[in-house]
Amino acid sequence: MDKRSFSGQLSAELARKSIHAFIAMVPAMAILNRSYTALLLMGGILFYAWAESLRFLGFFPPIISSVTKAVLRKREQGRFALAPITLGLGALLTLLIFPPPVVAAAIYALAFGDSVSSLVGKFLGRLRPAFLVGKSIEGSIACFTVSTLTTFLVFGNWKTAIAVGFASMIVDALPLREFDNIFIPLVAGFAALVMTNS
Image 1 (cartoon, helix red, strand yellow):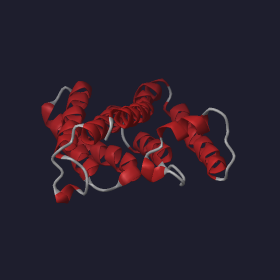
Image 2: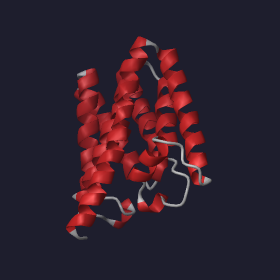
Image 3: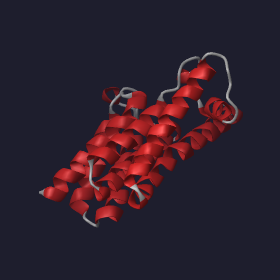
């Protein structure tokens, strides 16, 4: 890969993961008003689905379509980009199912653990065993480390933090593509719930 191509891919992936990490605002918003936060997530999912449907049909709503096109990966070219919908759904389901501290840990695993895993795996990952189906050991370690640290900041408990980090890493390593946005926070939230109630 030449320098210009690498730089372009890095810029697009950083922009994509910056948007992805923005979901970390959900726990703070939920402290202020949980119901309004859920409604805002639902509204965001529906609005994006509408805008992306229009883009897919050849109509380009301003701003949202240009942002989507700028951060699309090659495999998403020419098809409906699902990642923002699964991201919103993952956060929404987590918010509806779990109590506040668990919501924070689970969504931080999604926002930060998954984002760092993707960046490290894509640009620094060298060890790609067959059982990881294209993903890297380095990305998995990054997911575990960041998810563990953010959970420790929430709970102040290493046992819970390591359980959430491990759960996040396992789901992140699965070939789920965009659907990891749903399963990472749910599995991480379940791990946090089990550990805090044990």
